[in-house]
Length: 116
Image (cartoon, rainbow, N blue to C red; front, top):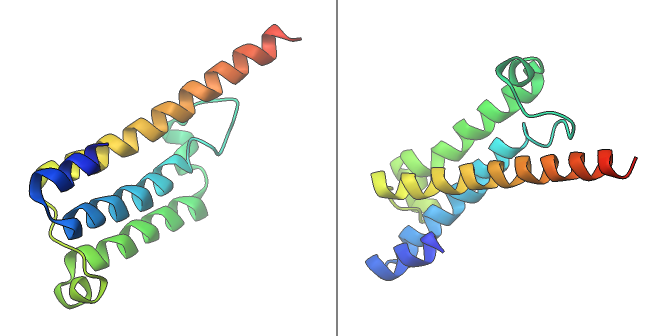
């Protein structure tokens, strides 16, 4: 919804597409830590315990940044420069996905203990 509002406020489909591309790819990299365990919420020790997963997420962030920050690759991907308010939309989407997953896990844990 925020992305749609961003498009209508700027009338620039390329900016909206870039925000969508960034939000989807970075939220996928963020929620991988939430779905790693269905019984607990992610903590710093659980995030850093799997160095291969952490390395893959860091590599994914770097690869995501290439079409956003390298000018000639930005032109090839048709991405646009994102301003602070665009990044706020991206981070809000990432946080909302992780919070939704954590609330879902909490509800499933409660239902599981209720049905036992």
